[in-house]
Length: 317
Image (cartoon, rainbow, N blue to C red; front, side):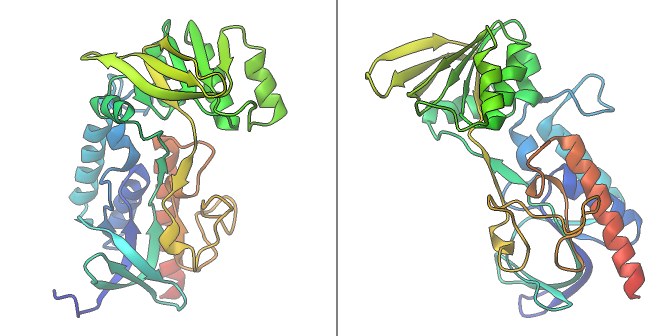
């Protein structure tokens, strides 16, 4: 098919994490012949996660990339059309939802399921990225990975509510948690800030930035930090380095048509459904979820989006 030819589909799924693949499985089984574009990071955030041990049905655990390959194979088994590439532009102003790929191919979809997820923000230090890619001690999800650091010392960077929540979560598993806050106070609500201040094994270092994540071939061994007021540099021993400075939902291309909150998460038009403010456009996974951000909740909303899309099509025809 050449780019000039407009492709018409009943269901277009944008994104390929647990939400997108689950939507594809349900939509394909409902004979909606879904077409999925996998996006910039096929498999989504889970491809940066080494061990997934909290997804039901995997008693021995599974790696993030292996799990995504299994979900992809399951969707393909029911003839979902899964494609490399990404959607770079949409026009949801009319009844037919128009979308364009990076190569300019135009698709007209009766229903669209947005499963573009969110990207964790990192500090951007070369040493941080090195151990993140190695799967050896850098993580952006304490709830996902904290278990691996039981009885060990960890460092967490961040100043907001979720950083405080994650620090408190780690404090129950780790012997010591050092919290690095860049300014001289928390951004978090008072109740969350007080909770970490009153936890004996959490040490809070204000006015502190990370200079380097230290480690060896086995993973992280510490963090080199600097007090930006005094200039003092010191090394903190740790085996886990957690980054909790926020997420950015991958929703920029929808901003002209879909209602977003102040950070960019897609708003549900009707709580308890996957509906957006545009009829026929549904959302699943972390593009709309700043609360839970788990593979299992993303998969659940992927199922909801496919069922909502199927009902929408049934009412139309």
